[in-house]
Length: 260
Image (cartoon, rainbow, N blue to C red; front, side, top):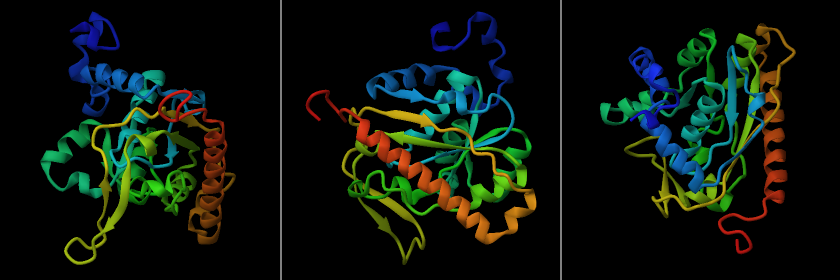
């Protein structure tokens, strides 16, 4: 049993002192996630750009309808830095106990302003996908084309004076293929869902790259400046899209070296 843990025997009896969202990355899922990493041949670059202490906003592109990107990001930060990032997720994860219990164990929090502010006030890392569900539920025909960014991350970074760490994920788009984005306007107003091709993940090669942190040179009051907030969000989006494009041009293959 000890092999399932990151630490040796002396740490086993302290596991009951850990929060559930920290514990989930310390026990058996460690073993499972290491297998997934090897299956996806996941490469990580720039982990040194993630703060080792204090609050910060991890800001990745959202791709692949399964949510693998959120789980693997959280696992890699925990494995490398011994920190747990709190992931802001869609309210559908919290509609009933069957999905909310595992979501809470994975460090998922409903994406509300109050939750985000509390996480940053507590000096924790927060992962926020600025595209929302429109990013990971978009059709694969639009792969790696960033959708519109919500601007809450800029306001929170300004209000709490914390860095933004832009992050790009490559590979998730080809791991889970999505035909189209379904929009419900009658019975489930405003709900967006994917129309997936495959549930079992395909072995696309992954890369996660943490870019240099952005420290916004403005006072907290600047969060009320709508025009400034819009400009910053646009600049961050353009930065991430440019980096995605560069990494995609460098990528030697998707599934099999020398084939595709």
